[in-house]
Image (tube, rainbow, N blue to C red; front, side, top):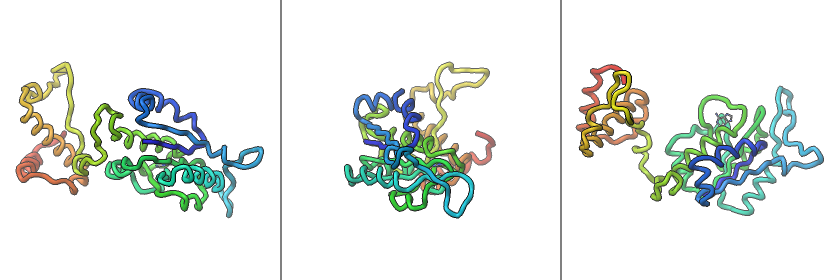
Length: 245
Ligand code: ADE
């Protein structure tokens, strides 16, 4: 998979992509990351990329021309590139969108800055995404989040060779079951007996139930699109008598 990040601050992307699993995937050529500074597409001696808004108001707005030139070059080189603008006004990112994006061979992420981008930039992109209902100072951290969530699904990045892009929506929308490692007891808190039993079938059932319980208690809205067996449904209803998680 290839990533192109269009940003005024390419240097902030180097550390996350040179370390750990992603660094290794880049080394192996499983992931490619190109950093494009749209200042390089600005005109004049001062390479101006932002300007004051028409109609007045505070702050600066990213100009359309440098972004348009950078995107034109990108689309000429690869007409299949899928361009995403990171903005708090975009559609909310979720695991289903992450999986869909994983199907694109080349994603370009456009990071906004300052008080916003010229409205005409929106016409140049394929979609607008937000990573949450809060405002960041720029799109760069949002771009990392998106790159991390999508790249971990690319075969070979996390070790597994098989594609998880197509894993079912239901799998992805269930919260993780609780995990434990040594020691067996810490400050009076014990690892559940079943995990020490060696009974893989029973462990799988326990994990699935814990994932369901955790999801129903913390994020009940995620369960709407999930298929459950009658037995699981009954078990969940029984748990409602108990408090906490
Ligand atoms: N840029 C600023 N805030 C953002 C957010 N919440 N998501 C995506 N891009 C952003």
